[in-house]
Image 1 (spheres, one colour):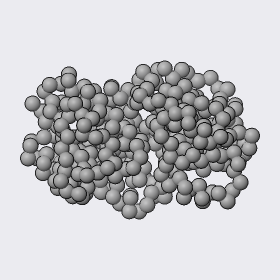
Image 2 (cartoon, rainbow, N blue to C red):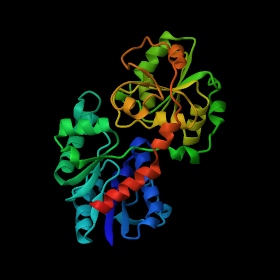
Image 3 (cartoon, rainbow, N blue to C red):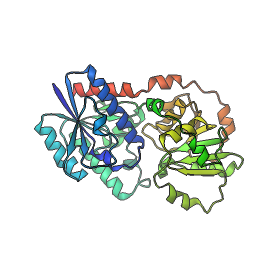
Image 4 (cartoon, rainbow, N blue to C red):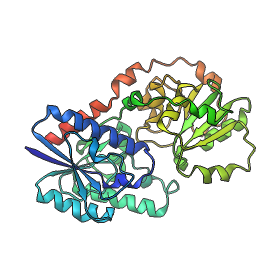
Amino acid sequence: MKRISISAVNLAKEKYLTGIQRVSREIILRIDKLLADYPELCVEYIFQKSAPNNIIKPEEFHRIVPVEMKSSSIRMNQLFSIPNHIKKINSKGVCISVELLRSKGCITSIHDIRPYIFKTYDSFKFRLGFKFMLEIAKRYAKTIVTVSEYQKKDIVKYLNIKEENIKVIYNGWEHMNDIVADDGIFDKNAKIIKGKYFYALGSLAPHKNFKWIIEVAKRNPDKEFVIAGGKNLQAWKEDIETHDIPNVTFTGYVSDGENKALMQNCKAFLFPSKYEGFGIPPLEALACGAPIIISNATCLPEIYEDCAHYFDPNDYNVNLDELLKENVASPKKLLEKYSWDKAARQWIELMLRC
């Protein structure tokens, strides 16, 4: 029987279920479900001791064995406890999230290398830690998994990793089927009228380019814009509150149900990001029946093909009405192409080959 150890102690650090945490949760839980078809695999999930923000609770597993790390230090676990544990039980280390995994011959994920390429989007401390994680991945990983062909090319270009050592596994969207839309968001914000607003969601990090929405809103006072997001929203909002932007509503953090309701009832979903590894929110919006107006930067044209309305993320003088008149393909082909179950099965096949 082949033993696999999925290292996930880093997932305890985040308060909200953001992109990489979503990917990790959906794929790992689907691996747990699919293991019924792979009796030759024994998989364990290594999580952080006493971490209230763990995105997967041990009781959610049916076949994967949860293993709790006793040290309260995530970094000590990553550098010493987990590698020692993996070696002791003769297992293969796997990382699906962004994890520092110092285990020879492991499989690890690099969702994107934005902090490595750009110096202005992240703090020096964060970039230094990220570069250290990349060096560990280059030294110890047998296979690197990433989420788009564009990102694969960047990894080859900037990190000098051989193309044959990188595997692309796309993300999915089916978690939206399990979410019940919560229309209570419209009661909380009377200004948000169904069918009358453009909607954007995400962290307000600089590369997400929410400045584009603010500038477009200023140029289109007759249109309503809604921005939802939890991380650093209030600080960012205060920074721009000196501007008169009456047609922009900041909701702050929204639940999955509220987000689904906002996607289902918007005129279009906006995604002005300047750099992405994959970019899940537009796919979620398509699953909710919303048209998407997205940046033509980095991987987005690869992922969304001819199913999106595109714009230059540096151009604030776009005509949203004209963009929406453009003919785009049905999202059906994308919803069939991308799947968490497909991704989970590809991960399992990779584990079997490693």
